[in-house]
Image (cartoon, rainbow, N blue to C red; front, side, top):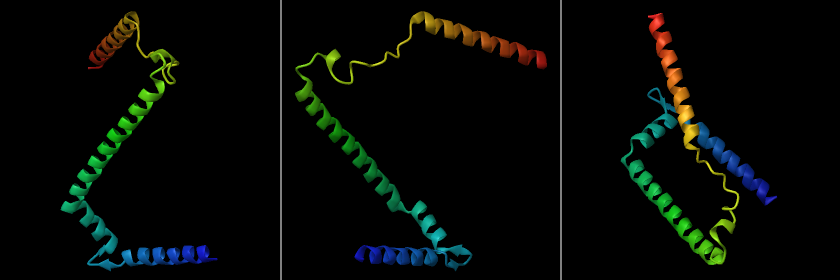
Length: 120
């Protein structure tokens, strides 16, 4: 029952806040003014830098944790037998395939140029 009252109270507070943000002052709502302030505020740029640094730090921390874990767990296995390395698809293409695709692309470009010159 307490949870239901909490949900109802939060709905009422949210609804009241939304209605308050729609009040117009000089042809602009409070919501528009607050969004404009957020976009132009000098504090937002600093907060973005802090958030970016936090993301970089979290990535480095996660990388360190996973590398230490995988080094300790998988050091007894050959690299080709480690999970995640056994079924890696090779995305490398043969030299002849790349040359063939390059030749086809050059032919298409040449045809497009010829068609363009005929149209002009």
